Image (tube, rainbow, N blue to C red):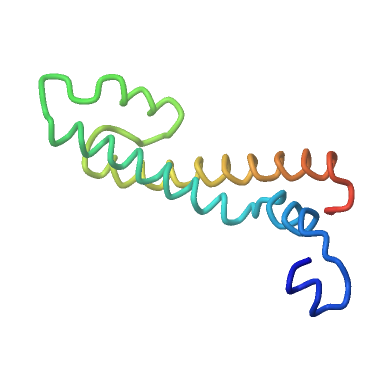
Length: 112
């Protein structure tokens, strides 16, 4: 018996407490984290190509212009990529947490 169980006067189902705390993801936190990773990742990739230089800088990365209007492998494009990457990353992080929470609630009906 744990000290908490003794202090409260009854047994505590530690497994249920841990499961309730761990199972749910916070969608806002996931959106912030994924947004930061996406934005910094695209910014870093663009800057890396700019610093590396060459004949055709970022030929493949320039294809993102099809999805992100105005984006190009340039210094202004790096900052625009930071914004685009953050937006897409945040949306993806929020969606992952939302789907995860729906599945977790389906498997553990008492969590909702």
